[in-house]
Length: 208
Image (cartoon, rainbow, N blue to C red; front, side, top):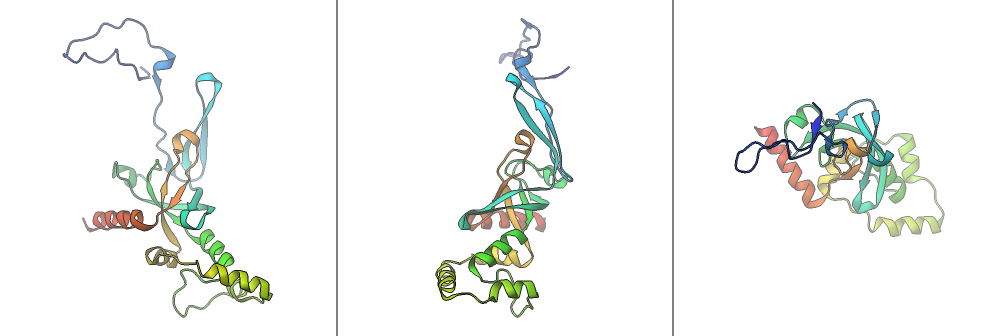
């Protein structure tokens, strides 16, 4: 028995049984769920109607994530799955699905921010910078370039909740692609009201 998406094998609304009028058809098939797990990349291709392809991600450990307010997208590592509105079981088994809330590595975003604004991000007060970081932030620049950075720095505000996360080099993000269909786990960093909402939810879950 394959997975069927037809309706004629179901009972009528009145509760009576239907007589099947025909055999199963290819266009009524269903496929097993991908249940993409967190792990070393493994993607299978699936031949679909019209000779097209789907990419069934069985395991993924990285994706492209976008920092919306800064218009910056970077490829980064997915560290953990922390919340799923539809099912807690998907958190326990670390399953990557659309709209899952995950923890990602913030390092690529911090590096971009510090090179773009020449300002430290998520550094603890009085923390010692490495030589490479020191050089990137405080290197000698011409007056023209210095003026450009000064203009950028006027707009370089990061909300406090996000800055706290950058201190631990881990930020919350939401997966917006469908890993079982396109073979990718891409998404965006949570900010503003959405970040507040999910932080409340995660805290409430931990408190149970």
